[in-house]
Image 1: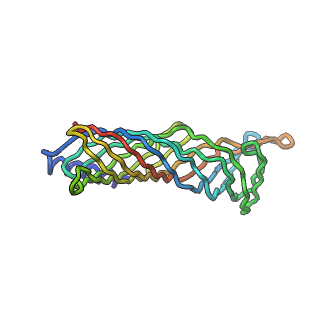
Image 2 (image 1 turned 90 degrees about the vertical axis):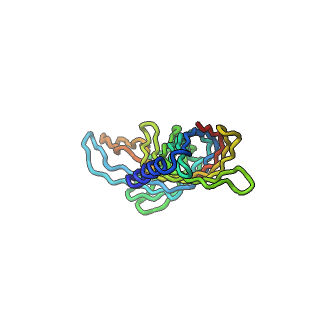
Image 3 (image 1 turned 135 degrees about the vertical axis):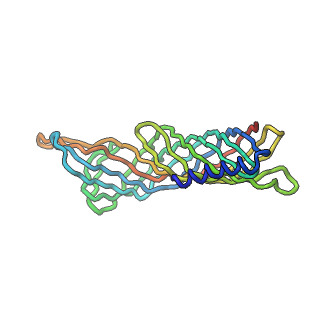
Length: 249
């Protein structure tokens, strides 16, 4: 993502040097609905422990499709305009909960244990159906650095179209770690006065996430065995429609 960050900084520098007379600082506050796509996921455990002795393990369970829930999001954006181009820092919530559903899973090793209170057996290479309850993920947040382009107002109106894109990062508690991704979108802004405006926009966010789902263990004839941390890897592909109010300084 370093090239993307370099491009944004370059855009800001050019904007400040080319058209300083039309520079503006603004703050946007917004809220809306988040509509994530269905996504595949992978569960991994890279080690096991038998009677306190660590041994290699390569457990991998592939889930064909998870259905996340829609949710309400809130956010804010701080930006700088110089003529038709600008830069902004964007922060918003994200709630990628998982619906109660039946999933299909395939493992590379035999899996036989209780999951969410139900016995689950997965033989290597065999796709099986597993019922899971609704899984609530702690409220997360995303932070993005955006390059923005605005067009002249549409003929006969004061409505200004704009588009944006830039790198985004997922931030949450210690159970979920994010990675760099992409945010892009477009919107319309209607000024009510020189300092206040209303806007609506579509936002697309694609970012990877990895969550710790705990460990699995048991005792057989006095032998205690546990897995290492089981991690869940998935891509969060999220569509959002938001509206809000903007203040120009």
